[in-house]
Length: 102
Image 1 (cartoon, rainbow, N blue to C red):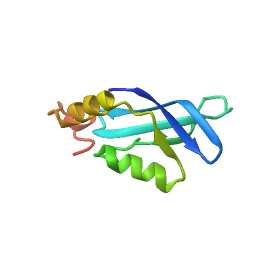
Image 2: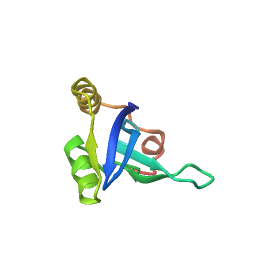
Image 3: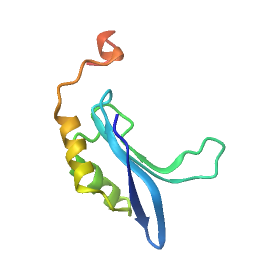
């Protein structure tokens, strides 16, 4: 799993510690930002929690925009690293090996 710090904005608010990355076991990009004050530190926005939910970097950024968030400060080298990771053949997850998901 990769994890890169980005800046996420919504209206006048900015989270300079938001993260984006690729989750190899789920085969999806993920994005988290704007940590809430609940007891669990659940992010206000948390995309990419389901198997193959966002198979492209472009798709997850478009979804964030559709929800009013803007991604910035995503380094070119980080994008290349995520794209490289997403393009590799990955071993089946434990759930796939056990037949829970296909």
